Length: 229
Ligand code: DX5
Ligand code: ZN
Image (tube, rainbow, N blue to C red; front, side):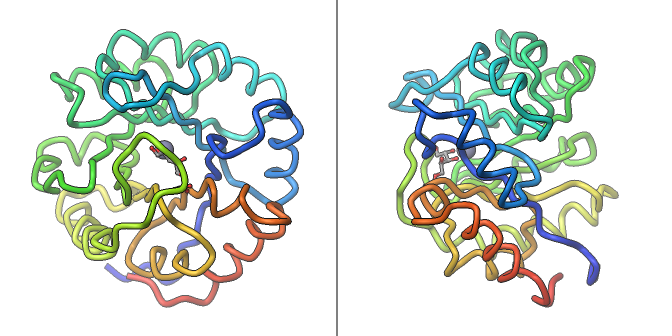
């Protein structure tokens, strides 16, 4: 389906922000026109790193009205859905590799008043999504192995996004957003958008630059005018 009037949504990852000045970093992202804020939650079990939990989400909620896009890289997402919803998450995304009862998990996220998302590691086939696609608001395609910021982009993302867009149309859920996460910077953001990605996550590609707000604006400009599927 051709969607010529779609617009990119930018979700900078706070994982690469300066945690000693988190509120200021959030303001910089607001200034740069961020559409939401990507919050990476890691448990040291599903991924080999530990990051932040509901307490930080609650603090973020107090300093911004931007939607909080919470990416749960944790082994037992079901036990933490309510705490993240209560803390102020707008989107809660769980890994299909971690959620044992995905349908129930997705329903629970919706019942908690949040938008449900599901995410796939780079080597997980898209076909695992077949049954759940009609029920989700967002699919997050990882373009690095989850766990750390600053890794190299895995270019299979492009064909996976295009194929997923087709699957969503076939599943009768064309409004479902496709998000991409990992290794996205100014030089590949337009190609990601063009391949069918709606929501761009970028951590080091934004916060690692001299002027993160301006980089965010440049990313949006890079995607504008790009022909899209
Ligand atoms: C990785 C996280 C990403 C990460 C992206 O596990 O899910 O959101 O912050 O960082 P960059 O953009 O630096 O690859
Ligand atoms: Zn993430």
